[in-house]
Length: 121
Image (cartoon, rainbow, N blue to C red; front, side, top):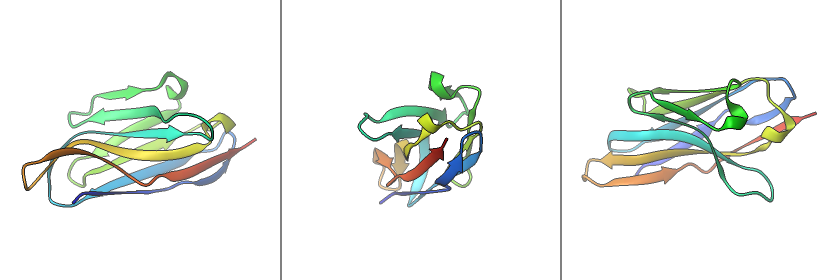
């Protein structure tokens, strides 16, 4: 079984910064892509940023230039550095690991439980 554990959420003032971390644990051989999604109250979950095992990145237009995703493959950990935060960034942020290959040779997607980020104006 694979678990994703997020950390780093909290309350921050507009213009501030936060760094999220997500560590995947379990009998993992390889993880294809890892990423961050968010869901604001009353809205659907949306992509924030993803990064492949080869470090190719993809960002939502709303966070380009402000957020940076990175990854440590040796630790099966993904990070999200968030700068110049805005009130509209307030949401629950979820970590995702795509096509996680485990020791039983199964490849599945996994989600973390989410961490709340609140940006005050």
